Length: 261
Image (tube, rainbow, N blue to C red; front, side, top):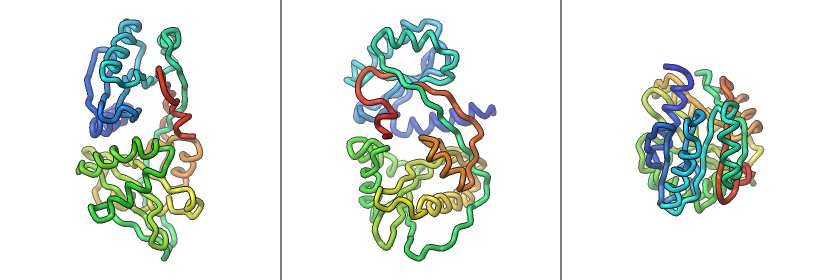
């Protein structure tokens, strides 16, 4: 299978775990009216210049407005979508572009010294509240309004395994492994602010890598949100093999960069 197709297949499987997917001739509609503020759950995915761009834009606006959700597009291969992006702007959409690095694990578990202050647990009903609390503190995840419901959905889906790191007994970091077929993707890796700078992310990634190895996954992917995060993964066994040029067009609310910052 083509590399981009592998990435897209895993991406769509992950999105469908918390969103409804509707395939159309020009792209895909993702929606979850119970999570209207969750951008990934509510957007039109377009990977090539539509043949009838104005019709597509009107269809997307109508679809999401009927659900009382902000119309938004995730655009890929934007180098070839200049006219479509111009039309979106004419119709009142705000637009931001960004690079999306795609990283692949090198299949070698990173070697790190043991830290006696750190414990890592798989998330169960016993520690679920602690893991959810940590993720709701992470502003890059959208805060409690987005993450609390999303975490509950993921926890009840057997394709997700969540991990909670405690430092001296205090919950402070999380990571997640999503598995689809023989591929996996690292998600929701974060540490609350007061515990950053202690090397905790590396320990979590080491743990997830061991899990991926035990599951005999062919590939383990990660999609870092910015260059700083990309560098963290690069130091921990992940290599950037592709960088997608992406766009986000939206009628209301914050940009993705605004949420992440």
